[in-house]
Image (cartoon, one colour):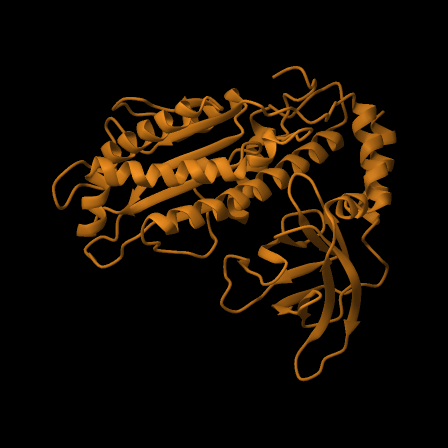
Length: 408
């Protein structure tokens, strides 16, 4: 079994590794929005060989894989940005077995052409044109490149793992009010509650709003003023096999009273690396009955799903929150927060405003204003999971416990 899996994995690793390709740095990612298509231009210092394909599940994406590439784009140190046309947001994943750019699509699209161009006053360019198509056409052409998909399926099937998607008629959400107990978080400067109290009050309001719909199973990491370790917060979400984890906080700018507004964070590359290490060190993903290589494939599949879903929800949350109040950062933000470092559960950390800003502090301490903010968060959750309630739709959260589709 182990020899068979190793042979298959060697083929998987080779599918996007043409001989003689050069390592290079990505120096720019640009977009051209046209009536009939969206053009993506990836500029590099040296020639690269790239392979592009679309994925329809768990969300519409365009993935461009490189044999070997590094990120060196001025102004985008977090390796993420906002696209145009058919592209919503994008990010660079340098930790994958093959470095890749992942573009979240705003609708079904197919690749109409891909070409490589020599420098013309800049660097080498990989040009990809995508055009809108019907949902059925998108589904028919989307998926991993055939060689990789077939071989991965062989490995998973030989390992005895069932990745049948799970129905999501009742969605499981873990709400994590930050701090608590001996940890008050940011202190009140203009009266009212400290950060821990505001986070708990907001979390309870969000819980009640979601419960009123009857569509969610809500789990609180804490529902009173107690201290819960960061490790336990992550463990709660993992043991619950949650579909979403949202950690509530209120920011601080020290002595600066100017910054105000909300910010939403998803995991960055360092957090993803920590999640990968955690998956193996804690043993959840290790099964002695299957080759280690298979466990690694499953971890990477789950991490890819987690990151994609986290970014999609973060975008929905930013949009809804922006309608209710100011945003401190309206662009995609990533961080290495401990509560984001599970390998399975899509997760965001939501800074609801600044404790050091008088107006933010007033709004966060006002029951009605805070409820309005949580109603926006609930609307983002509704939007993110809207496809779950469509006939025949499922939502896959991955994970080591999905050995059986009926296990949940």
